[in-house]
Image 1 (tube, rainbow, N blue to C red):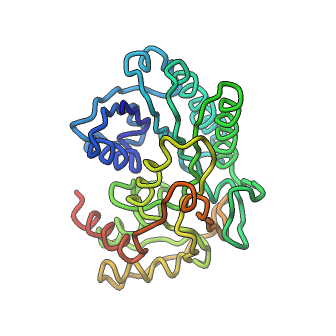
Image 2 (cartoon, rainbow, N blue to C red):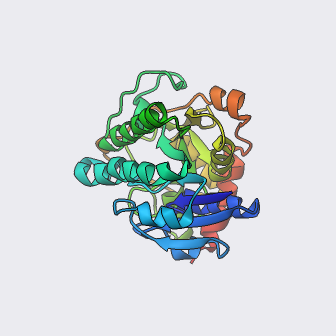
Length: 302
């Protein structure tokens, strides 16, 4: 297939590109390198340096994609709180731009959405039809983008799919700013620094390894629309995650505490039963194995 991957030089996107190349697809990366890295690029993929907020029609006319894996995003909750207009420009208007560029070619979008930021606080594993109560502009923007996909499906007879990812972690994740806690902590441990926990550390998340997320993303292609949770279905507190990172690294590192951040959730976990039933997907990587593989990457990263 001819596949376009927006954000294909980023963390998840570069892994998706690798998997598409491995199955012999013709792959086109669309990235403006706001957060993506050139060293993540697969040399077998064609690069198109482009911002999804800018006109995409001529580029997609050149690529003629059959599937678009839409991973380009403003993915930082804190930034969305401080700069909600910018967040909406990227995550809502950028997605509409991708939708419209893909439409003349009949290309299916597989869209990277978010679980925790859309459902809000979860007393039990959230299902796709549960109440949607985002606590940050980021979650609201992703939810709005999902609704655009659903509208396009009804209006134009397309079959776009939204995947609500849990807390994805693994090699190549950005360890700076307010990125994933696993990347930030392991990078600091590798540098001999002390990681900081925001809050008391009892906050719980659904941590899912990037290779499992890639498998779910590829499995979704070709299915007839819908929304699917992609997570392990089990909550892990930050304190328990720290213990796992100590086991993975073999370093008995200490942590510091700072006040909780605005927009952060106390508990978020996803029920991925629908993905198992309809996509034939289930996570295969244990948390300990994923942390070990991620530590091996950050322990040797420059």
